[in-house]
Image 1: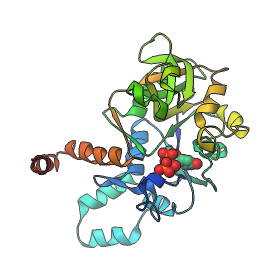
Image 2: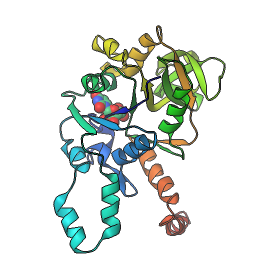
Image 3: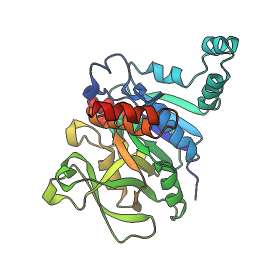
Image 4: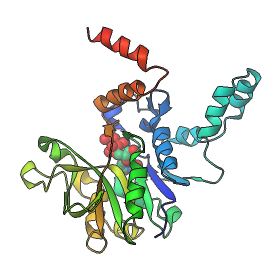
Amino acid sequence: MKPIRKAIFPVAGLGTRFLPATKAMPKEMLTVVDRPLIQHVVDEAREAGIEHMIFVTGRNKGVIEDHFDKQYELEATLKERNKTTELELLAADTPAAGMTSFTRQQQPLGLGHAVWCARDIVGNEPFAVVLPDVLVLNEPGCLKQMVEAYSKQKDKANIIAVEEVPMDRVHMYGIVGVGKEAGPSMPITRMVEKPKREDAPSNLSITGRYILQPEIFDILENQQTGAGGEIQLTDAMITLSKSQPFYAVKFEGRSYDCGSKLGFLTANVAYALNRKDIAGELRAELQQLLG
Ligand code: UTP
């Protein structure tokens, strides 16, 4: 079983639901408490043992590359001012040399297309895909739970993170049908992108984390546009599922869709309440606001 060493972070989307905030700034740099979304998911990937972070970027996304670089002037100033805690924080967050890659998706043609743009950097090995606008608050993190489930499967297994959603919202998500539970992973029998309530095989929605085999790239190469006129990763996974097993992992923890305003605001409150340094004061502020 080959280990999962590489993760793709697709960050080339337009973030239209967050305009005007995302006019000049990437959605993935919006902060939840004091860390950008993209840093939260890179932290999750590192915890899961991922070594190489691959970012699929687009126009206006250069600041993401800067975020993962050394900032010499800033570090020199912090040193002069004896700000050792901040210096240590920056050092801990900086990825190892040579372990980040940036490639471009020149046009936002869809998630499937963004993943395909990283095919050469991934090569012929299994890999993870992590959507930076989906945060999962839990220890261990969602990807670590998936890697553990993956290590218990046979070669060429694919894993998708799923969570339950209300039946009246299934039309908004990719939904999977599952067979009998075998440990923490359930064999996937069906995948449908945004089904009508009456056609949905379950209420288990695909939640922004995947472990995939490299054969997906050949399928994506010829993938036609699907829902929303975009090249959909789910459509390619449906094809791959005819020749390779797919498993759903119902992860521990709650996800926050930080691509939506409500999800983003809720994530900020949840993550802040999870932080010893500010939870107490924030709770008092919230109580006052809510009367
Ligand atoms: P979303 O559909 O949630 O992001 O894609 P979006 O398109 O940026 O946002 P809205 O809907 O316009 O508000 C999930 C992730 O996939 C990336 C996005 O950057 C986001 O992190 N993505 C999406 C790409 O990299 N390329 C694409 O063509 C589409």
